[in-house]
Image (tube, rainbow, N blue to C red; front, side, top):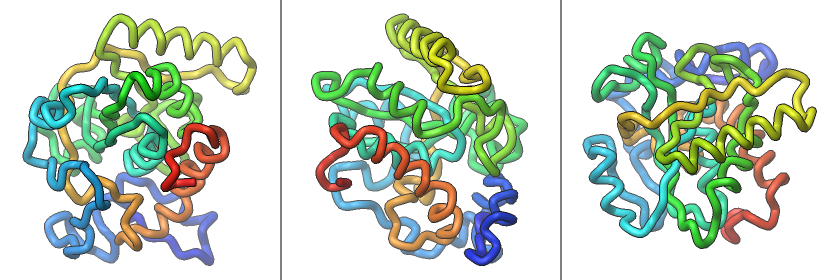
Length: 243
């Protein structure tokens, strides 16, 4: 489970996110404390787990959107949400054939879905290429079916493109990264056409922003370093409230 003892962080990081997501201290998905349902003040939708992606899209009529997968969606959602021009980010599931999967199905690694995010953004304030730059800093794109302690295809690195332009930009970015020598291993991020995107349960949404969520140890020791890495890499792109 996503429970970390700060005294044994190095050992705890070996625990997979798959088990961690199921709850803290034996708490089941249906027994989450009320505070888990609280949302950050702002314009984001208060509840999305029973909405289709089309219904969520309708709330952002003037926005562009992007789908990314980079390990635990708690981390990538928070990292991208801090970028100027990003309107909102929601966690969900994409890349698998099953219809309307729930967390427990996806966490099993058997549905083919990845933990993913949908990013709604203002293209006049931030470009898709810039979002790609942030995405590649927010996770390790050289790890195959894994991000740190989170292991399995549900934690794979993937870009689900929504247009030929997004596909071209993603492939060009990967080629540039591979040629740059930034990584000692090749980028393994999958680039594939976007299919269905399913919203994750409400308790996963905006998880990082909760004052002390049930799996606070994971947030503190895994999510926070990723978010702080983005803050350090893109100081001029960070929203004022996060500076």
